Image (tube, rainbow, N blue to C red):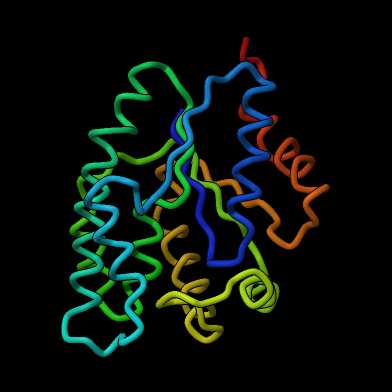
Length: 203
């Protein structure tokens, strides 16, 4: 099984992924955790762009989108495909849905989707659904500095973009909405409720 976990910054994805891993392992799944940007050389290029504070730099958004796509090719080749061949359940923290939701703020939606058309579709897309004000509150509390997209008005638009992306792909894969507003102690129960039907009858 290939699972992509998505959500705006501050949605609680990291905690959700830890709890999802715990749930899947309790079901007997061998779980491989990964993330984008990757720790590969291509991912380091992306991280440099994400730290760019001058968003008016010519073509920075096109370069960022292309860098993410290049890193994604590496990610599939070096990590995701090998893990799937080993029958592991892959959970990636962000995938091409993030690229479309974030980079289409400044670049054509169709263009970003087009440069990612090579990407293998996951079996399950998890969207950690959080109120934007809650996400901003978390970012303010836990981050010493912000990255390129971590501003309230941008996160509001990114949230809308995500919903457009999900609507486009919801007939091609399974979409699971998890509640990003929950307390940490409640997350596992939400995962169990939403994911249990996927394992019904599985031995």
